[in-house]
Image 1 (tube, rainbow, N blue to C red):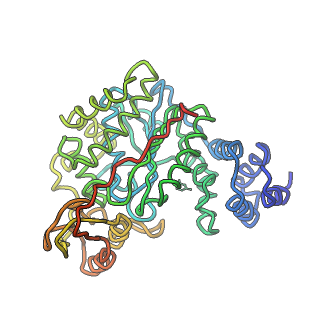
Image 2 (cartoon, protein in one colour; image 1 turned 60 degrees about the vertical axis):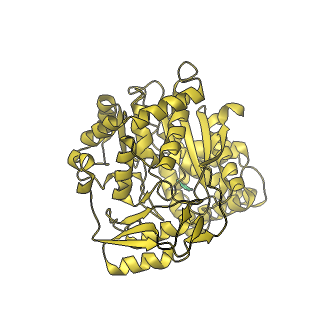
Image 3 (cartoon, rainbow, N blue to C red; image 1 turned 120 degrees about the horizontal axis):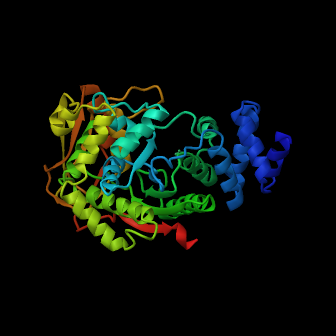
Length: 441
Ligand code: URA
Protein backbone atom coordinates (compact mmCIF):
# COMPACT_ATOMS: atom_id res chain seq x y z
CA UNK A 1 0.00 0.00 0.00
CA UNK A 2 1.22 3.55 -0.71
CA UNK A 3 0.19 6.66 1.20
CA UNK A 4 0.00 8.72 -2.01
CA UNK A 5 -2.77 6.42 -3.31
CA UNK A 6 -4.81 6.94 -0.12
CA UNK A 7 -4.42 10.72 -0.36
CA UNK A 8 -5.52 10.76 -4.01
CA UNK A 9 -8.48 8.48 -3.30
CA UNK A 10 -9.77 10.69 -0.50
CA UNK A 11 -8.98 13.84 -2.49
CA UNK A 12 -11.25 12.50 -5.25
CA UNK A 13 -14.12 11.90 -2.81
CA UNK A 14 -13.87 8.10 -2.61
CA UNK A 15 -14.22 6.04 0.58
CA UNK A 16 -11.16 4.48 2.20
CA UNK A 17 -11.30 0.78 3.07
CA UNK A 18 -10.74 -0.62 6.57
CA UNK A 19 -7.26 -1.87 5.62
CA UNK A 20 -6.28 1.48 4.11
CA UNK A 21 -7.34 3.32 7.27
CA UNK A 22 -5.42 0.81 9.44
CA UNK A 23 -2.38 1.26 7.21
CA UNK A 24 -2.50 5.03 7.71
CA UNK A 25 -3.08 4.95 11.50
CA UNK A 26 -0.59 2.19 12.29
CA UNK A 27 2.20 3.59 10.14
CA UNK A 28 1.66 7.19 11.20
CA UNK A 29 1.74 6.17 14.89
CA UNK A 30 4.95 4.23 14.23
CA UNK A 31 6.55 7.33 12.67
CA UNK A 32 6.72 5.79 9.20
CA UNK A 33 4.48 8.29 7.41
CA UNK A 34 5.75 11.88 7.24
CA UNK A 35 3.65 14.73 8.63
CA UNK A 36 3.25 16.31 5.16
CA UNK A 37 1.47 13.22 3.81
CA UNK A 38 -0.64 12.79 6.95
CA UNK A 39 -1.59 16.50 6.72
CA UNK A 40 -2.65 16.10 3.10
CA UNK A 41 -4.89 13.17 4.00
CA UNK A 42 -6.38 15.05 6.97
CA UNK A 43 -7.17 18.00 4.71
CA UNK A 44 -8.80 15.67 2.14
CA UNK A 45 -10.92 14.21 5.00
CA UNK A 46 -11.72 17.74 6.17
CA UNK A 47 -13.12 18.65 2.73
CA UNK A 48 -14.70 15.34 1.68
CA UNK A 49 -15.78 13.89 5.03
CA UNK A 50 -16.05 10.19 5.84
CA UNK A 51 -18.99 7.81 5.62
CA UNK A 52 -20.25 5.83 8.63
CA UNK A 53 -18.03 2.78 8.02
CA UNK A 54 -14.91 4.90 7.44
CA UNK A 55 -15.57 6.89 10.62
CA UNK A 56 -15.96 3.73 12.71
CA UNK A 57 -12.88 2.14 11.14
CA UNK A 58 -10.84 5.28 11.82
CA UNK A 59 -12.02 5.41 15.45
CA UNK A 60 -11.31 1.72 16.11
CA UNK A 61 -7.88 1.94 14.46
CA UNK A 62 -7.02 4.92 16.70
CA UNK A 63 -8.44 3.20 19.82
CA UNK A 64 -6.43 0.05 19.07
CA UNK A 65 -3.21 1.98 18.39
CA UNK A 66 -2.39 1.56 22.11
CA UNK A 67 -3.66 -0.29 25.17
CA UNK A 68 -7.34 -1.22 25.36
CA UNK A 69 -8.29 -1.15 29.06
CA UNK A 70 -10.16 -4.17 30.34
CA UNK A 71 -12.10 -3.17 33.47
CA UNK A 72 -13.75 -6.55 34.02
CA UNK A 73 -11.84 -7.09 37.29
CA UNK A 74 -13.52 -3.91 38.61
CA UNK A 75 -17.02 -4.19 37.20
CA UNK A 76 -19.00 -6.31 34.76
CA UNK A 77 -20.43 -3.22 33.11
CA UNK A 78 -18.18 -0.15 33.04
CA UNK A 79 -20.11 3.09 32.62
CA UNK A 80 -18.44 6.33 31.53
CA UNK A 81 -19.40 9.88 30.64
CA UNK A 82 -17.87 12.48 28.40
CA UNK A 83 -18.52 16.19 28.17
CA UNK A 84 -17.49 18.11 25.08
CA UNK A 85 -16.43 20.88 27.46
CA UNK A 86 -17.66 24.26 28.51
CA UNK A 87 -17.45 27.14 30.93
CA UNK A 88 -18.10 26.18 34.57
CA UNK A 89 -18.58 22.52 33.65
CA UNK A 90 -17.73 20.67 36.86
CA UNK A 91 -20.30 17.93 36.10
CA UNK A 92 -17.81 15.04 36.35
CA UNK A 93 -16.84 15.99 39.92
CA UNK A 94 -20.48 15.69 41.01
CA UNK A 95 -21.86 12.96 38.76
CA UNK A 96 -19.18 10.35 39.40
CA UNK A 97 -19.61 10.17 43.21
CA UNK A 98 -23.36 10.38 42.66
CA UNK A 99 -23.36 7.30 40.42
CA UNK A 100 -20.86 5.52 42.69
CA UNK A 101 -23.22 6.13 45.63
CA UNK A 102 -25.62 3.67 43.91
CA UNK A 103 -22.91 0.97 44.13
CA UNK A 104 -21.99 1.34 40.48
CA UNK A 105 -18.17 1.31 40.34
CA UNK A 106 -16.56 4.15 38.41
CA UNK A 107 -13.06 3.96 36.92
CA UNK A 108 -12.56 7.05 34.80
CA UNK A 109 -9.67 8.66 33.00
CA UNK A 110 -9.98 12.36 32.32
CA UNK A 111 -8.09 15.05 30.46
CA UNK A 112 -6.55 18.44 31.10
CA UNK A 113 -8.00 21.61 29.69
CA UNK A 114 -6.65 23.56 26.77
CA UNK A 115 -8.54 26.70 25.84
CA UNK A 116 -10.82 28.52 28.26
CA UNK A 117 -10.34 26.78 31.55
CA UNK A 118 -8.88 23.86 33.41
CA UNK A 119 -10.02 20.31 32.72
CA UNK A 120 -11.23 17.89 35.38
CA UNK A 121 -7.65 16.97 36.35
CA UNK A 122 -6.70 20.62 36.81
CA UNK A 123 -9.73 21.16 39.00
CA UNK A 124 -8.85 18.15 41.18
CA UNK A 125 -5.29 19.41 41.54
CA UNK A 126 -6.68 22.43 43.41
CA UNK A 127 -6.82 19.97 46.31
CA UNK A 128 -3.34 19.69 47.86
CA UNK A 129 -1.82 16.25 47.40
CA UNK A 130 -4.45 14.91 44.95
CA UNK A 131 -2.39 12.65 42.66
CA UNK A 132 -3.85 12.22 39.19
CA UNK A 133 -0.83 10.35 37.79
CA UNK A 134 -1.58 6.79 38.84
CA UNK A 135 0.07 3.59 37.66
CA UNK A 136 -2.38 1.12 36.16
CA UNK A 137 -2.08 -1.02 39.32
CA UNK A 138 -2.91 1.92 41.60
CA UNK A 139 -5.81 2.93 39.30
CA UNK A 140 -7.32 -0.55 39.56
CA UNK A 141 -6.65 -0.87 43.30
CA UNK A 142 -8.34 2.45 44.13
CA UNK A 143 -11.32 1.56 41.92
CA UNK A 144 -11.73 -1.79 43.70
CA UNK A 145 -11.21 -0.42 47.22
CA UNK A 146 -13.04 2.92 46.95
CA UNK A 147 -15.59 2.09 44.25
CA UNK A 148 -14.37 5.13 42.38
CA UNK A 149 -11.21 6.45 40.74
CA UNK A 150 -10.73 9.59 38.65
CA UNK A 151 -7.23 9.92 37.24
CA UNK A 152 -5.26 11.23 34.25
CA UNK A 153 -5.40 9.51 30.93
CA UNK A 154 -2.60 7.00 30.47
CA UNK A 155 -0.18 7.91 27.64
CA UNK A 156 -0.59 4.43 26.20
CA UNK A 157 -4.30 5.07 25.53
CA UNK A 158 -5.04 5.88 21.86
CA UNK A 159 -1.55 7.28 21.08
CA UNK A 160 -2.56 7.77 17.42
CA UNK A 161 -5.10 10.36 18.54
CA UNK A 162 -2.53 12.26 20.61
CA UNK A 163 -0.17 12.45 17.63
CA UNK A 164 -2.86 13.32 15.08
CA UNK A 165 -4.45 15.96 17.31
CA UNK A 166 -1.17 17.91 17.44
CA UNK A 167 -0.99 17.79 13.64
CA UNK A 168 -4.66 18.77 13.20
CA UNK A 169 -4.12 21.71 15.53
CA UNK A 170 -1.47 23.23 13.25
CA UNK A 171 -2.98 22.29 9.87
CA UNK A 172 -6.48 23.77 10.22
CA UNK A 173 -8.11 20.33 10.33
CA UNK A 174 -9.53 20.22 13.87
CA UNK A 175 -13.07 21.26 12.90
CA UNK A 176 -13.99 18.12 10.95
CA UNK A 177 -16.91 16.04 12.19
CA UNK A 178 -15.42 12.55 11.59
CA UNK A 179 -12.05 13.67 12.98
CA UNK A 180 -13.55 15.20 16.15
CA UNK A 181 -15.91 12.28 16.72
CA UNK A 182 -13.15 9.74 16.04
CA UNK A 183 -10.74 11.55 18.34
CA UNK A 184 -13.15 11.68 21.30
CA UNK A 185 -14.59 8.20 20.82
CA UNK A 186 -11.22 6.48 20.29
CA UNK A 187 -10.23 7.49 23.84
CA UNK A 188 -13.60 6.44 25.26
CA UNK A 189 -13.48 3.02 23.55
CA UNK A 190 -9.87 2.44 24.66
CA UNK A 191 -10.80 3.37 28.26
CA UNK A 192 -12.92 0.23 28.59
CA UNK A 193 -16.49 1.55 28.91
CA UNK A 194 -19.45 -0.61 27.90
CA UNK A 195 -21.96 2.23 28.30
CA UNK A 196 -21.23 5.88 27.56
CA UNK A 197 -23.28 9.01 28.22
CA UNK A 198 -22.14 11.92 26.07
CA UNK A 199 -22.88 15.47 27.21
CA UNK A 200 -22.58 17.46 23.99
CA UNK A 201 -22.60 21.19 24.67
CA UNK A 202 -23.84 23.81 22.28
CA UNK A 203 -23.72 27.57 22.27
CA UNK A 204 -21.20 30.39 22.29
CA UNK A 205 -19.07 28.77 25.03
CA UNK A 206 -18.90 25.39 23.30
CA UNK A 207 -17.06 23.80 20.41
CA UNK A 208 -20.38 23.40 18.57
CA UNK A 209 -22.19 26.73 18.25
CA UNK A 210 -25.59 25.59 16.95
CA UNK A 211 -28.10 22.86 17.76
CA UNK A 212 -27.65 21.40 14.26
CA UNK A 213 -23.86 21.13 14.64
CA UNK A 214 -24.15 19.62 18.12
CA UNK A 215 -26.78 17.12 16.99
CA UNK A 216 -24.61 16.05 14.04
CA UNK A 217 -21.59 15.52 16.32
CA UNK A 218 -23.67 13.68 18.93
CA UNK A 219 -25.20 11.39 16.30
CA UNK A 220 -21.82 10.64 14.73
CA UNK A 221 -20.29 9.77 18.12
CA UNK A 222 -23.28 7.71 19.22
CA UNK A 223 -23.22 5.75 15.92
CA UNK A 224 -19.53 5.01 16.34
CA UNK A 225 -20.20 3.67 19.83
CA UNK A 226 -23.15 1.56 18.72
CA UNK A 227 -21.19 0.13 15.77
CA UNK A 228 -18.38 -0.71 18.20
CA UNK A 229 -20.84 -2.61 20.43
CA UNK A 230 -21.31 0.01 23.15
CA UNK A 231 -24.55 1.36 24.69
CA UNK A 232 -24.79 5.05 23.90
CA UNK A 233 -26.86 8.06 24.98
CA UNK A 234 -26.03 11.64 23.98
CA UNK A 235 -27.54 14.66 25.72
CA UNK A 236 -27.53 18.02 23.96
CA UNK A 237 -27.01 20.69 26.60
CA UNK A 238 -26.74 24.46 26.79
CA UNK A 239 -23.43 26.31 26.89
CA UNK A 240 -24.55 29.82 26.00
CA UNK A 241 -24.07 30.88 29.63
CA UNK A 242 -21.79 29.36 32.29
CA UNK A 243 -23.03 26.22 34.04
CA UNK A 244 -23.54 26.80 37.76
CA UNK A 245 -22.05 29.80 39.55
CA UNK A 246 -18.32 29.06 39.70
CA UNK A 247 -15.83 29.22 36.82
CA UNK A 248 -12.21 28.48 37.80
CA UNK A 249 -10.53 25.45 39.32
CA UNK A 250 -10.74 25.73 43.14
CA UNK A 251 -14.01 27.69 42.87
CA UNK A 252 -15.49 24.80 40.87
CA UNK A 253 -14.26 22.20 43.36
CA UNK A 254 -15.95 24.20 46.12
CA UNK A 255 -19.18 24.34 44.11
CA UNK A 256 -18.99 20.60 43.43
CA UNK A 257 -18.60 19.94 47.17
CA UNK A 258 -21.55 22.21 47.97
CA UNK A 259 -23.63 20.41 45.35
CA UNK A 260 -22.65 17.04 46.80
CA UNK A 261 -23.81 18.31 50.20
CA UNK A 262 -27.14 19.20 48.60
CA UNK A 263 -26.44 22.94 48.63
CA UNK A 264 -25.48 23.54 44.99
CA UNK A 265 -26.96 25.99 42.46
CA UNK A 266 -30.20 24.77 40.89
CA UNK A 267 -28.90 24.53 37.30
CA UNK A 268 -25.82 22.41 38.03
CA UNK A 269 -27.93 20.25 40.37
CA UNK A 270 -30.54 19.58 37.66
CA UNK A 271 -27.87 19.06 34.99
CA UNK A 272 -26.01 16.47 37.08
CA UNK A 273 -29.22 14.64 38.04
CA UNK A 274 -30.01 14.20 34.33
CA UNK A 275 -26.56 12.92 33.39
CA UNK A 276 -26.38 10.55 36.39
CA UNK A 277 -29.91 9.22 35.76
CA UNK A 278 -28.96 8.30 32.17
CA UNK A 279 -25.76 6.63 33.39
CA UNK A 280 -27.71 4.49 35.87
CA UNK A 281 -30.37 3.76 33.23
CA UNK A 282 -27.64 2.30 30.98
CA UNK A 283 -25.75 0.60 33.81
CA UNK A 284 -28.97 -1.11 34.95
CA UNK A 285 -29.00 -2.97 31.61
CA UNK A 286 -32.77 -3.32 31.54
CA UNK A 287 -32.88 -5.02 34.96
CA UNK A 288 -32.52 -1.99 37.29
CA UNK A 289 -33.25 1.70 36.88
CA UNK A 290 -35.52 0.84 33.96
CA UNK A 291 -37.86 3.80 34.48
CA UNK A 292 -35.93 6.96 33.68
CA UNK A 293 -38.36 9.30 35.49
CA UNK A 294 -38.22 7.22 38.68
CA UNK A 295 -34.42 7.00 38.42
CA UNK A 296 -34.23 10.77 38.01
CA UNK A 297 -36.30 11.23 41.18
CA UNK A 298 -34.10 8.77 43.10
CA UNK A 299 -30.91 10.51 41.95
CA UNK A 300 -32.35 13.94 42.75
CA UNK A 301 -33.20 12.83 46.30
CA UNK A 302 -29.72 11.33 46.79
CA UNK A 303 -27.98 14.53 45.68
CA UNK A 304 -30.33 16.73 47.71
CA UNK A 305 -29.69 14.83 50.96
CA UNK A 306 -25.89 14.85 50.57
CA UNK A 307 -25.78 11.07 50.15
CA UNK A 308 -22.98 11.14 47.55
CA UNK A 309 -20.58 13.45 49.42
CA UNK A 310 -18.91 10.62 51.35
CA UNK A 311 -17.99 8.92 48.06
CA UNK A 312 -16.21 12.07 46.90
CA UNK A 313 -14.30 12.25 50.22
CA UNK A 314 -13.33 8.61 49.90
CA UNK A 315 -11.97 9.19 46.40
CA UNK A 316 -10.02 12.31 47.45
CA UNK A 317 -8.48 10.40 50.37
CA UNK A 318 -7.54 7.44 48.13
CA UNK A 319 -5.76 9.82 45.73
CA UNK A 320 -3.80 11.42 48.60
CA UNK A 321 -5.82 14.66 48.62
CA UNK A 322 -6.18 16.86 51.72
CA UNK A 323 -9.60 16.18 53.23
CA UNK A 324 -9.35 19.24 55.48
CA UNK A 325 -9.78 21.38 52.34
CA UNK A 326 -12.92 19.48 51.37
CA UNK A 327 -14.42 19.70 54.84
CA UNK A 328 -13.52 23.40 55.18
CA UNK A 329 -13.73 25.00 51.74
CA UNK A 330 -12.02 28.21 52.92
CA UNK A 331 -8.79 26.14 52.97
CA UNK A 332 -8.87 25.67 49.18
CA UNK A 333 -6.61 28.09 47.24
CA UNK A 334 -7.95 31.65 47.52
CA UNK A 335 -7.14 34.63 45.28
CA UNK A 336 -5.86 37.94 46.73
CA UNK A 337 -8.31 40.28 45.00
CA UNK A 338 -12.10 40.24 44.69
CA UNK A 339 -13.78 42.59 42.28
CA UNK A 340 -17.55 43.05 42.08
CA UNK A 341 -18.79 43.41 38.51
CA UNK A 342 -22.05 45.34 38.79
CA UNK A 343 -25.05 45.53 36.44
CA UNK A 344 -25.05 48.67 34.30
CA UNK A 345 -28.79 48.78 33.57
CA UNK A 346 -32.17 48.02 35.11
CA UNK A 347 -34.12 45.25 33.40
CA UNK A 348 -33.53 41.62 32.54
CA UNK A 349 -30.44 39.62 31.57
CA UNK A 350 -30.74 38.82 27.85
CA UNK A 351 -27.31 37.15 27.54
CA UNK A 352 -24.41 36.28 29.81
CA UNK A 353 -21.96 35.08 27.22
CA UNK A 354 -20.15 31.94 28.35
CA UNK A 355 -17.45 32.52 25.76
CA UNK A 356 -16.52 35.93 27.20
CA UNK A 357 -16.56 34.61 30.77
CA UNK A 358 -14.32 31.76 29.54
CA UNK A 359 -11.79 34.15 27.96
CA UNK A 360 -11.87 36.30 31.11
CA UNK A 361 -10.99 33.32 33.34
CA UNK A 362 -8.19 32.42 30.92
CA UNK A 363 -6.89 36.00 31.26
CA UNK A 364 -6.92 35.53 35.06
CA UNK A 365 -4.74 32.42 34.67
CA UNK A 366 -7.33 29.69 35.30
CA UNK A 367 -6.65 27.94 31.97
CA UNK A 368 -3.86 27.27 29.51
CA UNK A 369 -3.22 29.12 26.25
CA UNK A 370 -0.42 26.59 25.51
CA UNK A 371 0.25 23.12 26.89
CA UNK A 372 3.21 24.39 28.92
CA UNK A 373 1.27 27.12 30.80
CA UNK A 374 0.96 26.82 34.59
CA UNK A 375 -2.54 27.06 35.99
CA UNK A 376 -3.50 29.34 38.88
CA UNK A 377 -6.01 27.24 40.82
CA UNK A 378 -7.30 30.11 42.97
CA UNK A 379 -8.54 32.54 40.31
CA UNK A 380 -11.87 32.59 38.51
CA UNK A 381 -15.28 34.18 38.28
CA UNK A 382 -18.55 33.64 40.10
CA UNK A 383 -21.69 34.54 38.15
CA UNK A 384 -24.57 35.59 40.37
CA UNK A 385 -27.26 36.02 37.70
CA UNK A 386 -28.52 34.02 34.75
CA UNK A 387 -30.33 34.76 31.51
CA UNK A 388 -33.95 35.69 32.32
CA UNK A 389 -33.18 37.09 35.79
CA UNK A 390 -34.38 40.61 36.51
CA UNK A 391 -31.74 43.00 37.83
CA UNK A 392 -31.27 46.59 38.90
CA UNK A 393 -28.31 48.80 37.96
CA UNK A 394 -25.60 48.33 40.60
CA UNK A 395 -26.57 44.73 41.49
CA UNK A 396 -23.59 42.38 41.75
CA UNK A 397 -23.58 40.27 38.56
CA UNK A 398 -20.19 38.63 38.97
CA UNK A 399 -17.32 38.40 41.44
CA UNK A 400 -13.91 38.25 39.80
CA UNK A 401 -11.22 36.45 41.85
CA UNK A 402 -7.78 37.63 40.69
CA UNK A 403 -4.24 37.40 41.97
CA UNK A 404 -2.94 40.67 40.48
CA UNK A 405 -4.17 43.96 39.03
CA UNK A 406 -2.88 43.30 35.50
CA UNK A 407 -4.76 40.04 35.02
CA UNK A 408 -7.84 41.55 36.70
CA UNK A 409 -7.81 44.38 34.17
CA UNK A 410 -7.35 41.92 31.29
CA UNK A 411 -10.32 39.90 32.57
CA UNK A 412 -12.49 43.01 32.88
CA UNK A 413 -11.62 43.91 29.28
CA UNK A 414 -12.88 40.47 28.18
CA UNK A 415 -16.06 40.94 30.25
CA UNK A 416 -16.87 44.36 28.78
CA UNK A 417 -19.58 43.03 26.42
CA UNK A 418 -20.32 39.79 28.26
CA UNK A 419 -23.71 40.88 29.58
CA UNK A 420 -26.65 41.99 27.42
CA UNK A 421 -29.70 43.65 28.97
CA UNK A 422 -33.31 43.85 27.90
CA UNK A 423 -36.04 46.17 29.20
CA UNK A 424 -38.61 43.42 28.47
CA UNK A 425 -38.77 40.05 30.28
CA UNK A 426 -36.53 37.36 28.79
CA UNK A 427 -37.12 33.59 28.85
CA UNK A 428 -34.70 31.43 30.81
CA UNK A 429 -32.40 29.24 28.71
CA UNK A 430 -33.16 25.51 28.71
CA UNK A 431 -30.57 23.20 30.26
CA UNK A 432 -31.10 20.54 27.57
CA UNK A 433 -32.19 20.63 23.94
CA UNK A 434 -32.62 16.93 23.28
CA UNK A 435 -31.47 13.35 23.76
CA UNK A 436 -30.07 10.94 21.19
CA UNK A 437 -30.45 7.33 22.22
CA UNK A 438 -28.25 4.73 20.55
CA UNK A 439 -31.04 2.17 20.97
CA UNK A 440 -33.04 4.10 18.35
CA UNK A 441 -30.45 3.58 15.58
N1 URA B 1 -11.70 16.91 21.87
C1 URA B 1 -10.96 15.87 21.45
O1 URA B 1 -10.55 15.03 22.26
N2 URA B 1 -10.68 15.75 20.15
C2 URA B 1 -11.11 16.64 19.21
O2 URA B 1 -10.83 16.48 18.04
C3 URA B 1 -11.87 17.74 19.66
C4 URA B 1 -12.16 17.84 21.00
